[in-house]
Image (cartoon, rainbow, N blue to C red; front, side, top):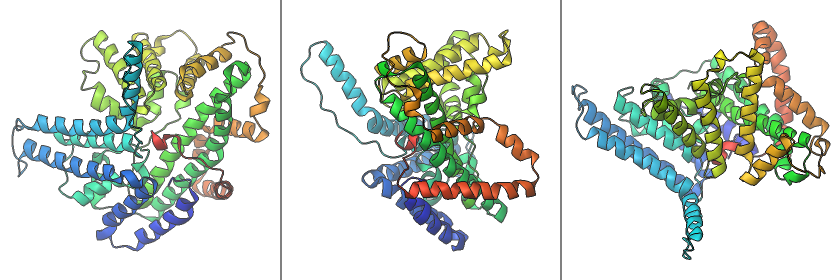
Length: 477
């Protein structure tokens, strides 16, 4: 079940909000846990045990770490010598779950390729392991919780229900944002939802729903058609159109999910961290990663980059740390060498900008924005392509290299609706609409926003009911 599924919009969500509003505060966490468990079970009945095992094990590891680090009464002055081994075991548990379910067949396939190269004729059978929903997110969430408890940033909760509710909260369970326990620990025990907070939550959810259904899904049809076409038959314009469509599709798809998750969180009284801040207006790749999937960027900064030494051990070590972080970032996104190459691509430009800061380049600010946008756009081609052959073909068409039969022109992929959607997406990917909204009075924003957003919501619902919807891109990451 995804947020743009008719069953969720017209069935699960209304019933959940109805009962959540009338149930006593004492039982709200239990209700959230059971409802979220049902939500997850509907989409992943065979692997719900993986999520439950993650909850129990991370809860146990955290309590053990807290007791070893602080003592039963919280007054131990020094950590017990077993604290680090228990933390290590907990981190390895989460990484083991992630590596097995997400990468085991990738490793086997590459090992078989190596066997073939050395003429060893006994390949290993693939396990054909299915990727459980949200495993990339809830394992990272578990690691952050254990490390934060070890560092003393948060006390391990002794309530298994409270911790389980935090882990299984359905708004952020499948595709983030990656919410740390410290960010919602206070609200896990007590939270209030006033009418203003609830209305803002509803508005945020509806905006995300519209972004997903009317913008991301429309652009997805264009991008999918172009990336599935023989690249040697594309014109340069078609290749560029496909790259731009996918760049905007993935932004509006993923930011829409984040909007909907944040909105649902507000309705329940939780304040989730923002995940996007107009990344395509960045003037450097460093700035892009401060604006794109911000909870993931902060996760890698706090739990990988800084523990590796950050920028505290000289330039060479800093470059190595940056490169390692982005290789891992690419690998986290999927078991494919193209994802790894995407991470390497961004890592190289991060090193370049570390050595030669864009702020010191003697070029107009506008040109720095063009540079960052082009780097990101070419990176998305790598990210989207099913293999390096398709990526290379797209690059050739975009850079006017090599021969082409030029059979498929832009008009073949772009309907008038697609062009209008693309234009709207470009505008909405900038802070312009936010600036306009700020200039309006509260009454004016309400008078203009309600009919516009309400009308778009109705159109989006009609599109969903017609069956023309697709899962979120990060649904199986």
